Length: 316
Image (tube, rainbow, N blue to C red; front, top):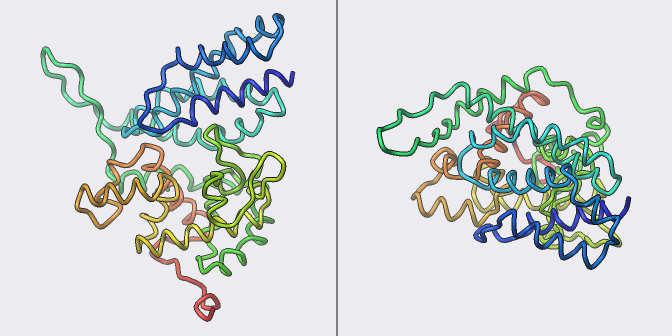
């Protein structure tokens, strides 16, 4: 059912490809989807398109976009069970399988958010006032829970060949080779992973970032899906971000949330460190950085502070 897969790709892009400061409602999505369907599908296809499963997928993706880019980590907890039920729907179609791969990797965020929901007591309510939002956990508490969560996690099946192949690439780009494990957090070392917002490959590079760092990405030929080219681009971006911010936590936050977002928060909060702005970063980023730290500790026994630029790179 190629038409259905094409619809999924189109509707996902409509929902998640907007600027963050625009308000997107489900009605907007449904209206646009209906228009697309009327122009491209026959009546039989339209009847299938209105099935509950498809509406469930669209609703989840819209909600997930909102909460990942929102400020409060615990708000993600309510999406955990729905996300788990949507993954098999995406796995049913070859063209939507890359989104299932992407979503599976992000189930960790929903699970950790749910853990924090149980651990952090809700603020006291005041009579006549709406309930307060549960505050974000402190950065150190986030690091601790991620270390615990990943402490016994086995290595992804595909990881070892890629790690061996791509560590020299990171070294050649003057980036600590251990940061190749960023691919576990981004894609579980599955190059098929594609985000609804358009990021793709092992290192989840957007088309704009890929082009900026020397890759070609189009529907005909996408180098983001090639391990070595994508590793070169990801490492160049990390090198740039570390040179700009002078700190690996800030560099990783910028890799995920965008360098403009990080710079704006540093300026607004008159801050100089990740910990000072962590609670104001997008919810996904608040968990992304400590997850990478915990992954490095699990796979390499290293902390970010232990990372060094390879000696060979210094001589370039």
